[in-house]
Image 1 (spheres, rainbow, N blue to C red):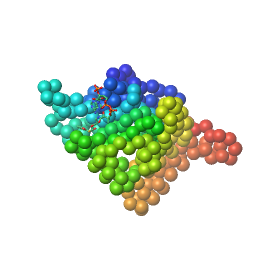
Image 2: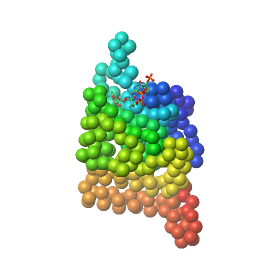
Image 3: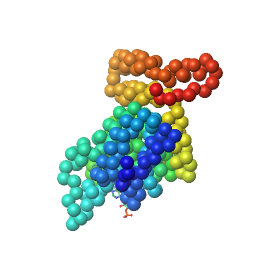
Image 4: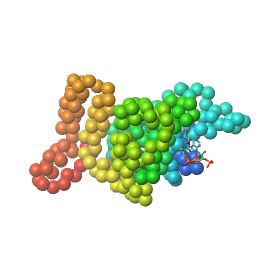
Length: 265
Ligand code: LHQ
């Protein structure tokens, strides 16, 4: 399917999605968000794609909401009257789609990730950032509150003290600072980001991806469950993992002292 504001590519079991409005640092307007929702839906259905990679075109990853759409300068249109409705319709489905997608999602953060763009990265399973990338909880700069899951993911990643400072001060957090804070998985030299992130996503796609999907379900659930409920879910999903072809292959490969050939089944 052709897209106007995204580039997509399928290779080596990886669906790559590039936010493609570089002139506005890939900020989200409603049409780009609608395309993103549609692509994430398709990603769930395509069994051949066993990992997803999200990145940005140009020098930014994503600058969050397109402010020209939300609140244009006087005389340039109406803007959004109901931000609650907009967040519910545009952003919440993207976050829920990423978290419920039964395959690993990697964000390759190639530049600034601001506002909902920073939240988008944090909703992914892995964040690999260029060494010159940055994260800004920009919302407070314009009198808004963090959204797109930031208040859910960020305190859990870095603790409440650091999350509060990031959100209330809206200071730029560099990629190395984000790594040190436990916010992201890896930092790589900018020139190597796309190669490293694509290679990493392809290596995920060769893993026992049913097991990874079930692991993601467990990690999602652990954010809300008590211990007893989580132990029960682990037991149930271990049962499911034990019925996969990849489990049989993994154990056979172990005994035969050879690398496994996983198929994601
Ligand atoms: C932009 C944007 C942008 C439009 C750069 N929009 N054009 C949810 C629901 C409803 C309402 C509102 O919000 C939300 C959630 C949110 O995401 S709120 C937070 C929205 N995002 C921001 O507040 C970030 C705004 N951008 C910035 O602060 C800066 O652009 C950052 C710090 C990201 C990057 O700064 P620079 O590297 O200095 O780049 P720049 O500011 O020069 O931007 C380059 C161009 O991109 C520029 O256009 P121009 O025509 O002058 O070259 C910007 O106007 C445009 N742009 N962000 N969000």
